[in-house]
Amino acid sequence: MKTIATIIFIFFIGTAASAQDRNETVKVETIEMGIVTETAYSKKIENKREVARLYRFKNSRIKKELSFATKRNSPKMA
Image 1 (cartoon, one colour):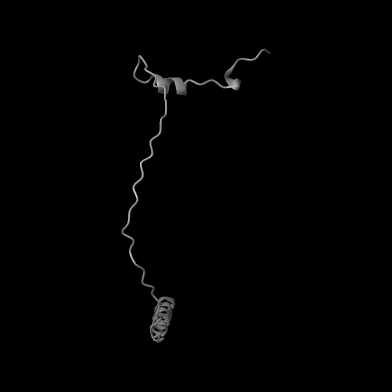
Image 2: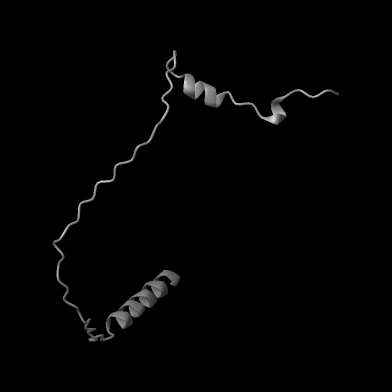
């Protein structure tokens, strides 16, 4: 009996929701804008001096960064 009442209640709510008339149309004002076709090219030349390091082994940079030591890693005297 409870399931039948629930099904009828859901059917009633669905019918009531679909019976509402909403004929409101909202108009949006549009603005026309032109397209800009001009493009400005600029070249920026920078003179940077960078140092490149050459390593003897393949992953030496990664190994160096992963082998860092903090202050807590150092042994303390008791």
